[in-house]
Image (cartoon, rainbow over the protein chains, first blue to last red):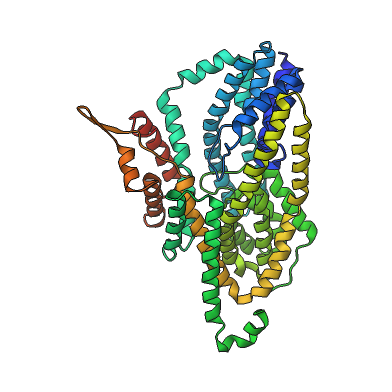
Amino acid sequence: MTYIQIILITLLSAAKAYDYQATQVFIFNSVFWGAVSGLIMGDVTTGLYIGGTLQLMSLGVVGIGGSSAPDYPLAAIIATTIAVSTGQQIEIGLTAGIAVGMLFVQLDIIAKLINGQIGRSMQNACNNNEFDKMNRIVWLSVINMMLASAIPTFIAVTLGSTVVSLIIETLPAWFTVGLAVAGGLLPAVGLSMLLTYMPTAKYVSYLIIGFVLNAYIGVPILGIAFVGIACAILFYHQKADQIMSPTMAVSGGLEDE
Amino acid sequence: MNREPVLTKKDLRKVAYRWISVSIATYGYELQLAPSVVYSLSPALRKIYPNDEEYKKSLNNHFKYFNCMPWLAKILLGASLAIEDTQGIDGVDAVQDLKVGLMGPLSGIGDTIGWVMIPTIFGSIAAYMAVEGSIIGLVIWLIINAVFWAIRVKLVEIGYYQGVKFITKFGEKINIFTEAASILGLTVVGCLVSSVVNLKTSYTFVSGDVTLALQDQFDAIMPSLLPVAVVGLMYYLLKVKKVKMNWIILGTLVISILGAALGIFG
């Protein structure tokens, strides 16, 4: 493959990251990213085929609420590039692409940790009255996330599939497993912080209700939100009725329809 | 209502575009999407608060943990501006309660529609046609997302104008409302503890021919025992011991990697 193709594929990977993080028009769309990679590499049909295959593999696998899921669109870009440049070997391309897509999940955790520092320096700028600086710092996060996608893509397409699988095999297991464990644990930090802001001690019952519905019965989050809405409506009417005592009748009467 | 609202539709549209330009790129484990909230709202908030101290107080309020499905989060941005534009700096507590109370339910709806329904329905159509060598399925998916784009840029305005109506209508009942929203929020957080946090032990006791998987014992006590213990411990450290967030994140990394090396986790 040519230098121009390497550059274009790396830029495409950065664009994919920006769309995933911000504009979200081609989000989770492995078909699209595979097809565009195919266009750059001069074989749209292979790109569509690989993108479609990865799209089917990704159905139902979505990273929600800060959890990290394999990056299938990234896998589509790398798989297409390697498959076309090594001469139509779609299987090798797919294997390397998926491997990098999985490895990316771990880089993603590191990028999000760096974002934590960037967010803090934004708040520091705010507290020093440097408001313009605060608004500029935010773009470091955007660049950070784009690099987290562009760097593994550049390495993968330059070194090729053999080296990629070699690197993944030589990373010590304790490191990769440890990062995966941390990925499962780190969302707990944010949740705990959230609980310190909320009236947790006062309304701990509702925390328990939400937990039991999901952990024991497996009710999905939307169903639990309905239960939460029901509890909130009951609470609201109970309290609103107390306010609607005779002394409040003048203002209350107008609102109560 | 303490003050005359100053924001125009143009200001609100600007907030929407600023949000779309950074969205979830700022995601970190402590503040989550709060930096994006601050970046999106800052010009509008500056217009509301010409005074530096009030502006800073409001920004710091928006620097608190916020995580919501990014398409629908814009409704909350609009509603927050509605409160601050009508009540000024006295409204920041109500803003925080509103955001925390509604971010979970909105995410529930947004995740289901944006990240599960659309990629599943249109993704599978596009994928099957792509494998056959056709781009028609892909084009249909892109048209759908273009339609959603047109809705997405308007959501801040919708949140703002509905928000003002809401506040005018409910008056002092807003405090009860936000408390009710906290109840809803806590119910959803209870669900997140078991669905988002993930920790299992792979440790096995071996005694002669008898092996005993520790995780099975934990599961016999209750599901998600370890995630609950972790959240409980972190909450205790943050709230009671006032431990800095950095130490907790670092500790989590060290314990995860040590645990993996010793074969306790994984």
